[in-house]
Image (tube, rainbow, N blue to C red; front, side, top):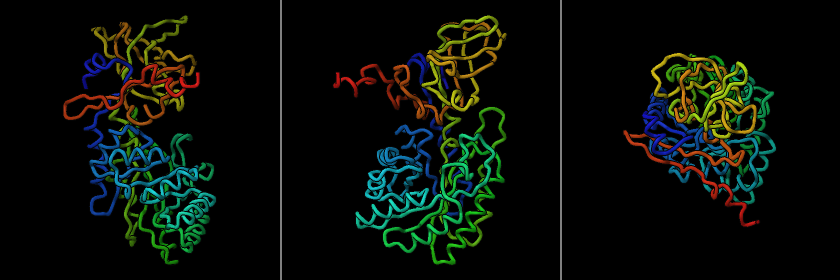
Length: 402
């Protein structure tokens, strides 16, 4: 990646994505499940740029969506409707109705109350709704509490006993067709044992449902495979596949995976320019043009990202300091207590690695800052896949009310 060339051509801050890396990750995961019916449903929430979704659609991927907006993005980018899953704990009636009208693969239901709303809406539309139920296996995923989803203390899914009752209810309803089962215990998973344990619990539930003549066709294992931000020991796709497949003996199901971060994170970079630096006593601050509104993960999760400095200096001397942005918050930082080159100047580049997931999608216009542009690198060429927002774009939904 020629970060200097890209920064000079498109300005900073910006996001840069390596589409070759995206494809490599997709193929590695797909290959791990070779010999079994499987679908990779890309988790759109990780990076919802239309060109990114299209890249995966062209490779044969489906889409895991958590809003009707993401469903529409997936369709617009070329994902087939029968490869789209609609999840999320809070779906409005109009979202449910539109998802049913669009004929997606299934709606992933997360509560009894939601199931009844889907049934009512399907009845009014005089159709049968294909559904799965998200089961919460109550397993500690051993990850950050904000991205843990598989414990009873989390808001997602229903417990196994409740799931049994909902499947029986759905099986007996003329307006519900329970075709799938779903679990997702968390994100940034680096241990196999919680994945295997969760899969075994849910597979046993499927066997129980078979005895009741409830035919589950899709076994959705969610996403969450971790990536390396620093020194994490990550799960290999083959080992991940074997952990799941070892629990499915005797079951003829299509395995659905919903990776997001695994596919895009390490193929993305957030590129920012140095504005100036200052010292408050012994504390050193490097002030850059990128901020927490552009890349929120460090502020929100205290997340670590590798940071690279591109300068003209030949000196290798460094000293510790914080890399901070212009936003008017003490929580506005990209990295704290990092080794920063002692000789760094206005216009030098700061490159934040592993920024291809939960980067741009979580950005905002806080402090009336326009969202940055997104650039794709593919087949040796750079191209814009989202333009930088200017001030007029920022206020266009407000001006007519002046």
